[in-house]
Image 1 (cartoon, rainbow, N blue to C red):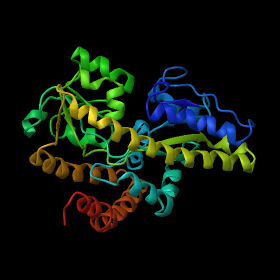
Image 2: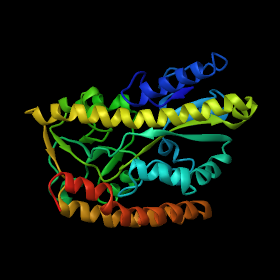
Image 3: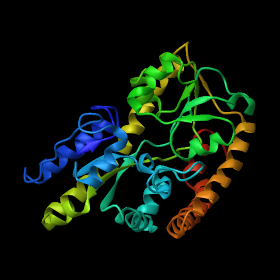
Image 4: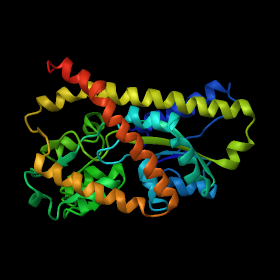
Amino acid sequence: MVTAWPRGAPGVGVNAQRFADRVGAMSGGRLIIDLHAAGELVPPFESFDAVQQGTADLAHGTPYYWAGKAPVLHFFTGVPFGMTALEFSSWLRFGGGQDLWQEVYDSFGVTPFYAGSSGVQAGGWFKRPIETLDDLQGLRFRIAGLGADVLKRLGVEPVLMAPGDIFTNMTSGALDAADWVGPWNDLAFGLNKVARYYYMPGFHEPGPSLEIIVRQDKLKALPDDLKAIVAAAAGATAQETTADFQYHNTKTFPALQADPEVEIRHFPPGVIERVRDETAVVLESLAATDDLTRRVYDSHMAYLAECEVYAPWSELGYLAMRQGGA
């Protein structure tokens, strides 16, 4: 198995290894997964190619890293102003999302398993504050996914680079801003040392998904019990990964609040309003790519609309009530 993450990276690299270890333990040693972190066997963004071409049997990554092969994969990572992690996993499991995801990957000969989420991500680290839309012009921003497409329409210069390269490029001045994950990962990568302004929450990845992909021929060759073990191990990893991020982001956040060199901010309402408008344009353009993408879009957005009706009466309503609201 190859991964898109540095070895032992909080949340991502750690849980990739936990999945591999879990499969070995559950199978009584009959199925052993040898993990190669980013750059050890192939570069991080070539993990999908490695599985497709047979260099590796599995990969742990996130679908939008391979969106150049199939732009529809953005819908299986995260959509700006889209589903939370719980909403997304429920769409996959019960709303037809998994079948659509498999249909996308069938042409590449791989099978996807959901591997959890980092939860609502931060908006990123900025060397100068974002107060108006003008502050986005020419901003060299490390950001991935559809959020990059949206911000590009507003004058941002998106840069996609491997996580392990973010700190160096922020330090050198090659980047003006960088999105990574959230408090836990961002502190671990030292991003609070290279930028002052930390924007939370982000609009672009409300519940981004991680995945484990397996070559279909390798998976089909396994006996049924080992197939079931791979699926069960992925499911257990998904639950553990999401809990891992929730716990450690919660525990880490106070250190950021207490850091006198860090200012935690919200994006201005005027910026978010324009970003929301541009998001609709980007999503409609993506949906027009082909019939499969349109079907994924329709399914995704239909369930999101239902979630928006329910949320004020469930999580959103409860959180407001817990904080003393009506």
